[in-house]
Image 1 (cartoon, helix red, strand yellow):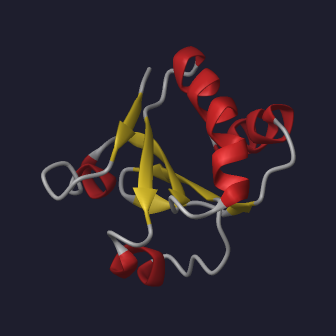
Image 2: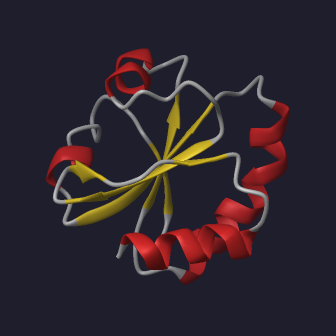
Length: 102
């Protein structure tokens, strides 16, 4: 589907979308920057939207979902988060995690 930057206007989608992936990151995070092309490629081939959540802009969400390390991914189904994936080592690891969350 697509990679979408989380904003105050679309933030409610986390609670209402049938399914979505939230990628928690920050602009100063070098590992997040390295992972960014992988996330972009995955967003183009998945049937689930990926929301990019800047923890500096949305610290309340990072706290709510106990995100202590970035990058971290959370798979939401009807607003309910699954298991967090912290510092994924590869696209394959992310794809396996998605399959386990679906």
